[in-house]
Figure (cartoon, rainbow, N blue to C red):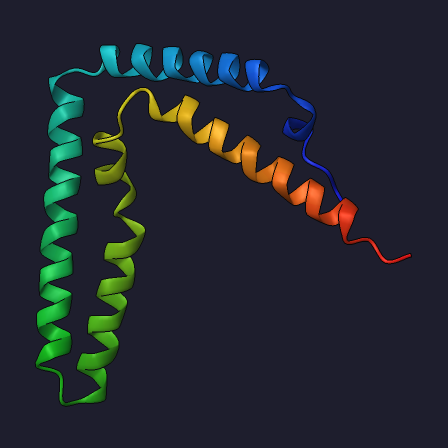
Length: 118
């Protein structure tokens, strides 16, 4: 089984790594300009419209082609939803998510070592 390189880091190292990611996140968001803001908001609007239109199409679809089109549009809307979640991400979430990941990895490694068949 392949073991993650992060599994060997201490909690302090994980916190430090999270702070470094937070600093990069803040630096990138400080460099965003009006053009970037317009792009992000247009992507969010496009995503919302695509979701509404695809659901309306699915709701009114009695023919198989309409159902396929609505499902395809909803799939596309799902794949474009990432920018809207990134725009609202709080800066401290990287450290918190890395601590949570570290706790899950430690729990997983304890389960695999304690449940190994002898």
